[in-house]
Amino acid sequence: MVNHGRSKGCVTCKQRRVKCDEANPACGPCRRLRLRCGGYDAKPVRRLKFKDQTHKFVVAKSTERRAGSHCASVRTPGLRSLAEPDSAVPFFLGQYASKGRETASARGFFEMLIPTYNAQPAGSPLELAVEATATMVLSLWRHGPKAMPMPRTAYAAAVSSILKALQDDAERRKPATVMAVVALQQYENIAAVYNLRPATRVHQSGAVSLLPYLATDGPSSAGNSIQSFVFHTEIASAIREKRPLCGACSPASVHAGNPSSVLDTIGADVALLQARHKQVVNQSLETTELRSVLTSQIQEARRIENQLLAWEQLVPRHWKPLRLSREQMSSSIPAYQGVCETYASCQIASIWNLWRVQRLILMVIMAESSGKIEAWADRGACELVVQGLVDGICYSVPFYLGDRSQPMLLSDFMDSSTVYPSDTMAHLNHIERSSTTSDHRGHIIAQGPWHVMSPLSRLMELIAERSGKFILPVLRVGQADWIREQFLRVTMLLHISLAHGIENSPGSSASNSQSAQEETKQLLKVVRSGLRFMSGS
Image 1 (cartoon, rainbow, N blue to C red):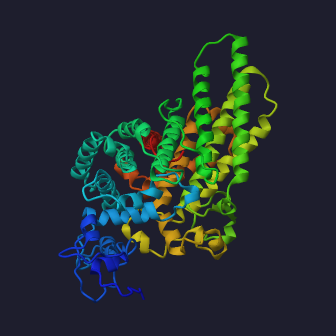
Image 2 (image 1 turned 90 degrees about the horizontal axis):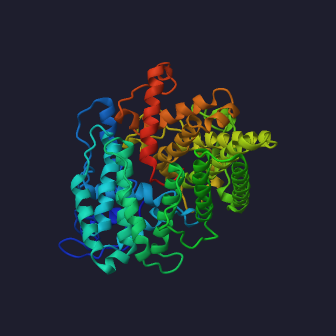
Image 3 (image 1 turned 45 degrees about the vertical axis):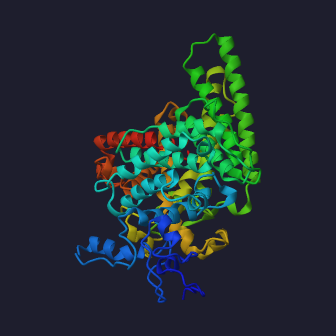
């Protein structure tokens, strides 16, 4: 039973388990979040629990939709429909900004979003930007992309509010203003992935341009955190686009206790080397000059590779993947070679996959450079490394997806029939003590497909590019096809393939036809374009 203590707060605040200022006619917390204040009835409402229970009172609706029933869904007195922004924001903050996050793996945006959001006045740029993004995310869960309304009103209001804030020197220096810009870039990223509008970095560029004005008060401040996040996404974008890092974007102070921050600093060197390598292979150089340049690149790649190997030894113990064999998990879970590696959170797993992708890029640079100047003595050892890195990404897929095989619905959060490898008792000690088993499972349901889509699509991209001449022969027979099937599976789970008019099921005979392969190439192109300015690989 929930203990409401001696609080005489409003019904809504009791449901959310937050402090109420007991103001009349509506309390401050409800006014700020634009919730309907439930009044000061002493009788607690037992059906709703902040964050998670928003899904409970739409489970009936989701289940009825599957079964074809037209019964009315359960309504909780005092709160608006889940279709409205005041329901979307708690859902978004609860499932994406709260669960699966920790200081040691912080990238800087989601970890600081809730406290910064809570400190903003009603109608602030950050509140409006989060409302627009949250409404889109919840609509995807409820309806999929076909019926998803673009929250243009909230988006336009957020843009207008940000533009007004930028005219004020004090507002321009606030971390909340930069976070509002970043939130709108998240909105643009999602819209681009679903082919609702072309990918654009307008807000990413805006966030970068605001960094020189940003107030940063210590390494743990909101300003320093959002600066780290913008730096991280700029590195990710530079690596994806094979371009140098933006000159205006410099790293915030590196936190030795945050492996993600350290990896970003190494990633800046990877981006620079990759951009130089792209220039070299597209230029016509004299033999002597070419040998000198390529030799220098190989040496630089080895230096960065040693840094990445050192990074692996410095990560906390609970970050290490826990390997499960087929006998230790359900047979219903698709697993490459019957192996799964589980992690403490989706974010930690994604940091590991980013590390693997960075090493793969270095292996490709060394392979292409060595092949142009001399017989490659280390080729066999490099091929073993490549196989191991690709295997590591494949082994993480079951952790992210479990045995899910149907497009996402809100009822997934309450569906106990879905099985994940981390549900096993052997994995419980691997979860952070601050995270409950239900929270751990919930954050995988919400975030897992998004996190794994990036490394899977990156592998497919590497195989399709010139680098595929080196990578593809290294892989086991059928491994590239397995990666492709899992990518299609993710796009089906997230309704992305449906948004692009692709209805073939992964692994079906139709999905292997020539036309289906062309559709997959086009889908990959659009997805990678939409992911360009997102966190990850």
